[in-house]
Image (cartoon, rainbow, N blue to C red; front, side, top):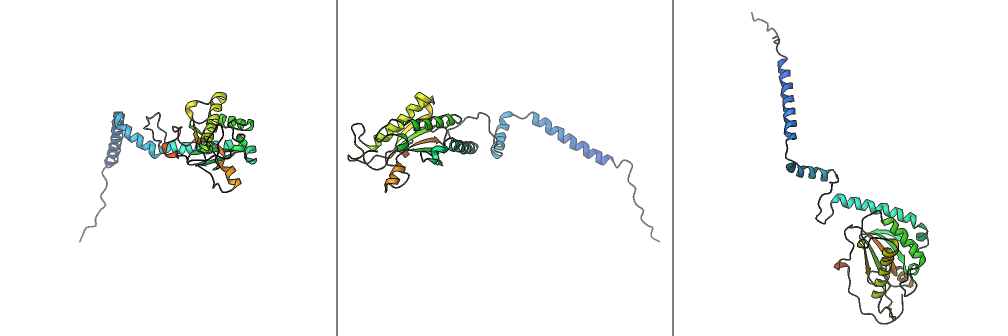
Amino acid sequence: MKKSSMPVRAGHDRWLVSYADLVTLLLAFFTTLYAASNLDASKMAPLSSSLQDAFAIESPAAPSDGHPTPVEVVKRSHSLDALKLTLEKQLAQAVRDHDADVSVDPRGLVVSMPDDAAFPVGSTDVSPAALGMIGTIADTVRSVPNGVRIEGHTDDVPISTSRYSSNWELSTARASAVVAYLVQHVGVDPARLSAAGYGEFHPRVANDSPMNRARNRRIDIVILEDTKRNVVSSAELVAPKPQSGGGGQ
């Protein structure tokens, strides 16, 4: 007759297995802590940098090679968006009266003033109303480090006067007049400023009607997207076309 199998009773020291597992885990844990406390800082730098980039954490005072990091680009974009909202509020009346326009394009944040609101015909004397707007813009852009470029633009009607022989010269003189005012009367750091005269070669719309020509005659105050770029690159310069004598802007 086959004997029935009897359950095997666990020994009284069975608990030692779980205890040994616990001790092993604790030993591994403290070994890891000890190893981490003795890591070479130079070896940890690449890992730290990778983690900061992955989680968009700003690195403290890292040396720059002249190219913005993705984090810097995002921060600048957000700064310009906030600045645009501020300027739209401060220049609301001028915008309603079509004496100013605030927009963002690949250059950066652009405040555009038509020349009939900024200058007398054929002159580089900035009007009192335009001086007020320019002062407001300057006070606002102090909060950002971006370079500021003043651009003069005309329509395609040739000009020839005793003082200015071309639209190119007139647009450059007007841009320079605004820069001089910002430096001498508003106190903007000259290192942040540049002036560019484009004549009729960067129109907003086609010069095919009096209304469109009026839109093209303007001064653009550009808060540049790149904080380090406060000069005009050679790719932006267009050689002027020969002009014959004629009317004025």
